Length: 223
Ligand SMILES: *Cc1c(COP(=O)(O)O)cnc(C)c1O
Image (tube, rainbow, N blue to C red):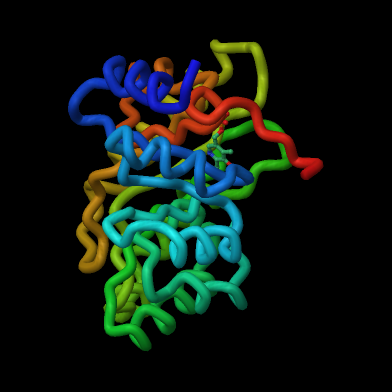
């Protein structure tokens, strides 16, 4: 199967309200261009350096999403162009994003990453932490960021019941955060679901899926 055929297959299976992020990490620009020529405009990367290089080389109407763990000292390398940062998992990072966005006179959209997986390895904050952050005065003064939703990663497991429970937890967190009155939050996006579980994620309320290997094929991290 070709990349453009994979892309078409997936797109045709998505409801209209669900946005597809094509996760292109580790893949060469020629692969991304095949998806681009097939109509894809939103790409997700998990390394800032790699995303910045691809952004340089590729057409400028692409929306770049940072889906990986973000180190504070690297925010400056993407602040001029990134469209959405999915993995905001601490307040200091948010302050840094705000500071760098201000330098470029931009407002950067962000998602709070919420820890939904029972396994230890996943990043993210608890619902309570997020809820208290967004109700502080300090948060409301961050004028160059906008929280537009939440992101989560389910446990890597065959146990779909567990994955479903975790997706439901993210949806529940989203609905509750949405009820809070805050200034620079406009809760509209739930980023959940990858190649193996995006259909289930959509059933559980996902509005944005991050699909990599089902579009570009399996990744080879050794090269
Ligand atoms: C790699 C990655 C994906 C895509 O995974 P696939 O299983 O290849 O679809 C989605 N989300 C995040 C955060 C990732 O790092």
